[in-house]
Image (cartoon, rainbow over all chains, first blue to last red; front, top):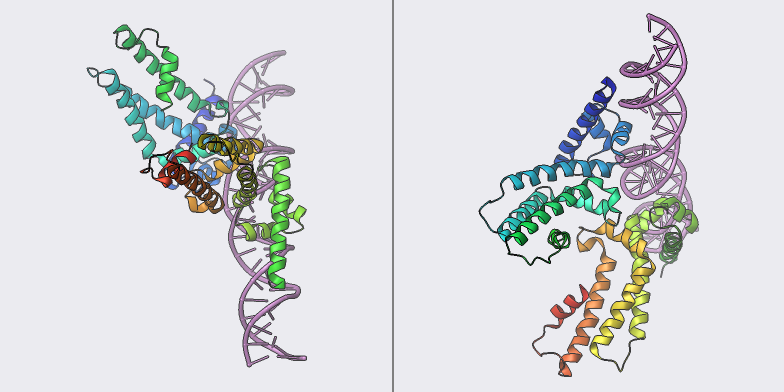
Length: 163
Length: 163
DNA sequence: AATATATGTTAAACATGTTTACTTAACGAA
DNA sequence: TTCGTTAAGTAAACATGTTTAACATATATT
């Protein structure tokens, strides 16, 4: 990696870190790009260069949060339990994660609702990954004979996810 | 009515009219408060004085739209038809109204979602009125013996409305 | 009528997300 | 090494919603 590129990544990291801290502390609307930039030791313009706009910055921060929560949930999945219990494990866990930063998630929703999925690539990727996991869980259930073999795993997991 | 008060009402009317025209023509984000004020022959500050903020101005404009649509639907209610047909008459009619200004309604939703109902008094009043109408329709059905007498009209109409 | 008060209105200022034009320094080629 | 190119970074400008302080005049009071 270049000296240029690594320094770029470092500033990006600093900005994202500062944004997470300020967002968590004061919420989205009260956290100014100028505040975030100052805390990261960068300029407001740099924030936009790295993240396109404030909403995208928030998205990135929350995607990280989801990432951590989801990994932890997958790691703590009750192995012996049944299908329903495992789905509920994921479901309630993600609800808790949402609840922990409810205001930030709400801010993201109100800024991205009605927008095409391409505007929130991080979130789209996350939901795809979640649907993929549910898909494989459903396939396992089909193999075990619990679910009907005709069940379309993608449709079924998407339905579960959209709960 | 005072000379002052009537002039105040007139500027308010002019602003609302200008806002409706510009919102319909260019959408919410592209319509500047400065544009609206100029078209109304007033100052940007005056817009805020009369409507508190841009979102409230949009709400007012859309409430007027809903008002007109709803009255027209009530006026064209199929008298001879059954309960279901009449509910569907209202329901599809309001959907058409929504569809006619979908982008404006979406803008209002994204700006007011997660906010307490008190922040959108016009819309709250409208939905109350709609629920009240449905309520009386349900009472009529109960009197005619079509619905079970124990049906709570408020709960039932709120359920219908929230569809 | 003269004066004081209340109120509708606004110009100017402000806050903040975003854009633009420029600077600086790292990188690659000679 | 030297020099032109490229890309990271930013200061300053801009756009726009909102606030503030001041103004002007209709209304109330004497």
